[in-house]
Amino acid sequence: MLWTGTRLRVNWRIVRAKMKSFWVNLLVKATLPLGTRWVRKQEAAILREGRPLRDWERTWAEDVGVRRPEEVRILPVPRVPTPGEGFIRVLNRFFGFLFEGPTGMAVNYGIYLEASQATNPSLLVHELTHVAQFERLGGVEPFLKEYLTQCVRDGYWESNLEQEAREAAAPFTRPPGG
Image (cartoon, rainbow, N blue to C red):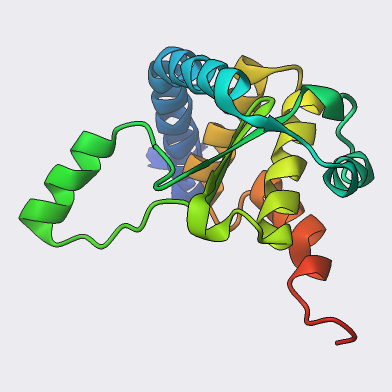
């Protein structure tokens, strides 16, 4: 803001950026405890019921930076659970939103894979990259704080963590020899 004579000149771009930052931080701060609790619960179920990585999957995990691939477990499920599923169903019913759930999800050392996609190497490498990010960022809460901030601030598709996972998985989406 600048004073010019008796008028106050406001740089609205700066004001909007500060307001967006305020709301992003508030939303992340409000959802982080619930998200952390949800992730820990899901991870416990996967670690209890899931299978360890196969040899080639361990190699992929190491290639994307997973430091402790022996800790990773995979659990194929008919549908990958998401936090707030009930709320999303209500939105779908009343407003006709079309939200298809994820086909995979990493929750620290646990990975859900939709059963129909459980043999998709691109999907697994994508999720293994998220496991590496959990490790690199310091665990569940620091990862979620960064992930939520990026998704809310920049959008899911533009978030750096999602872009990194897509880039790691890209070589596995090409046909052999292509």
